[in-house]
Image (cartoon, rainbow, N blue to C red; front, side, top):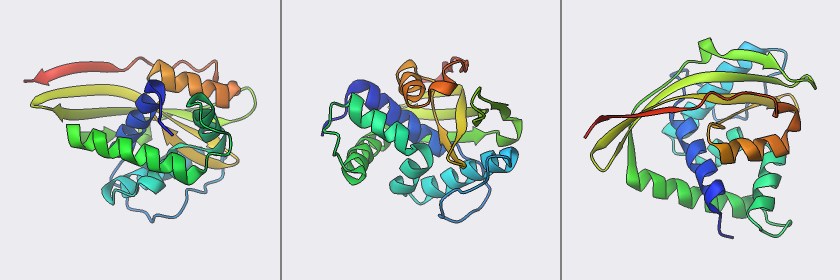
Length: 194
């Protein structure tokens, strides 16, 4: 299975989300926080991403960013057979993540779970925009990205993903139509040194 350009962008964005988690220590267990515990859920999913990132546990990163409806949408848009296994999709995403890590070095990461704007969709889904700043070095050029990531619940479980690119947000809206009215701030990218 070969992932198309929008899916590649989504996977790259997901990798950057994983890199921007806070310094809260936690285990590699799945994030299972009741949706009504909104603030705690956002903090925990961000912390779990940090743990997964630091240990380069791509399976956990995928698990924390892609609920089944989103995985199904990725498989569908990739043109893969509907019976594509999660393991096969995971292998492809891991290959892309390794390729990104070979090309870019993350210099500074910050995510402000405490400043998350928690909202409720028309269907009652909890979600939050979480501000973030990432500085990346790509072949000697440092780039700062100021962004808002999306934390959201599915089946009383929190997920964290970067939906700032139009392609990734479109996939998310198809998988979760109740989030279609959400306005994701456009990311700001600036070269800070060459």
